Image (tube, rainbow, N blue to C red; front, top):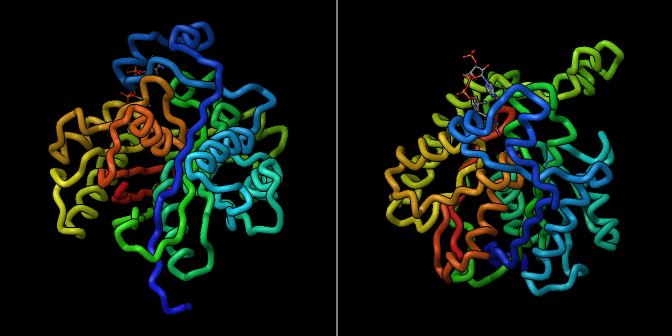
Length: 332
Ligand code: UT7
């Protein structure tokens, strides 16, 4: 039995964003900004913000239930939960165990990984590797963040960017190569850029103290221009590399789904790949940057819009704090 070659099939996808809509005009009431500045510099019109008592695992469970329903399996059929998040419910244990408990599942292994906005691409690589080892049959990959909990609402250069949300995918083992959904994955990271997007305090380097709170170091800090420059370079390189590695060109791709960080970044990647704007999925106007879940929310919107046909190919590419980056070519 162990000699079978197993492939990975995407069985179901689900996404969830909280109900509360915060518009650019709402933000003008708390920081010195304008709707015009936010829209022209980022493409964002509004974002969703979780309720005070809604945790990251709550967001993830809503997305997970939808993915399991779309996969047409029972929750009990899941044999591993894997969660990509940088805003875990608590420092430890892993958010995955709260998701497990809320889904009413028992005993199956659960773990989190921390690659920020590259959560989808890293998660797919981990899942397909474990499926290839014949260790698990139905893996629940969940990516979710409640970034509003670590956003400095006094910092106009960051608070206008982010939103809360979650996305989930059920990835299953199949012996049928025709059903394989993962054509390839390419990942990378560069710790030299670790300081340009960071939540400085609350870890072992600088445990939370009165000083760290006074200095607002328990909120995320970002050097926007540096992140922008690296994002365009790294996502562009990664997208081109994975296409070349697989003997494909952008013409072979039906949709490009990039991390939704800034409309100008998305458009720079589109231009570099030479694809028309109809092929590029944009959700940043409605949800802002939802971190790990942004690519899944975008793919889910394509599915809901009936844009994905059997055989459609998606190139998804992301980057995040670390810096980390990753690309995947998916077949539906
Ligand atoms: O998941 C990954 C995370 N993050 C990203 O991918 C973000 C990447 N970076 C960006 O998207 C952009 O750098 C930002 C949207 C964050 C900023 O846009 P920018 O065009 O790079 O603006 P900037 O930082 O160069 O700032 C230009 C001006 C500054 O004023 P001065 O110094 O020229 O007088 C800022 O103080 O805009 C000012 N500014 C604002 N003005 C109105 C910064 N934030 C705001 C604001 N409203 N919200």
